[in-house]
Image 1 (cartoon, rainbow, N blue to C red):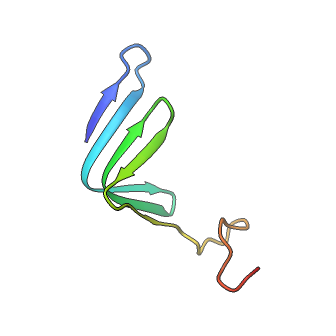
Image 2 (image 1 turned 180 degrees about the horizontal axis):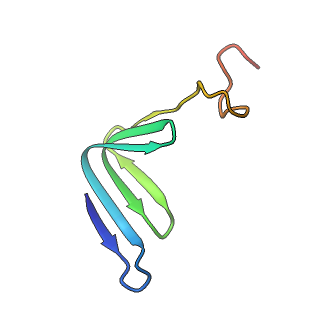
Length: 71
């Protein structure tokens, strides 16, 4: 992982991760060969056949997705 900082603001400008990268946000997990995070727009770019695993078993709220067979 390589990290670049903005010298003036002392915040992360960019992070580049390579080789079997895993990103975790709560119960959701993303896997890819590489990830690039840009601090200014707070975007995460996944490269090399990314795989995203959502936690759809949560009982909190209505959830993001409907269960199969529901309308």
